[in-house]
Image (cartoon, rainbow, N blue to C red; front, side):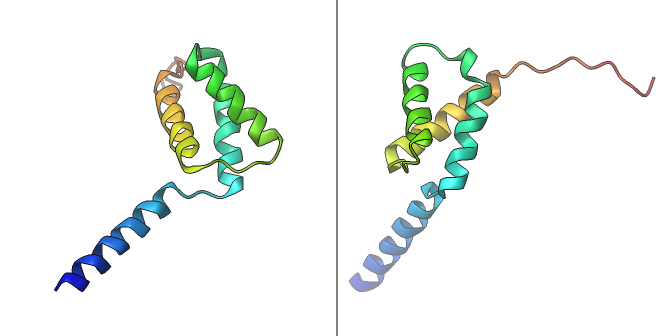
Length: 91
C-alpha cells in the first residue's frame, strides 16, 4: 500500500510539472503579448518584464519560477487591459 501512495504522488508531481512546462514558441508568444501591455507596468513588474524580454531576445528558455512569474504577470495585465467601447453596430 505504501508503494501505491508513492506512485500516485509521483504521477501528481509529473502532471503538475507538465502544467508549467511550455515550449519556446509559447514563451515567445507570451512575451510578445506582454510587450503590448508593457506601458501599464511599473516597478518590479517592469523590471521583470525587461529581463524576460532580454532573455527572449537572446533565445534563452525560462526556468520554472520565471515561467510562473510570466504567466502571473500576463493574467494580471490582461485584466487591466483597457477595452474599447464599441457602439452597437446592429442598431
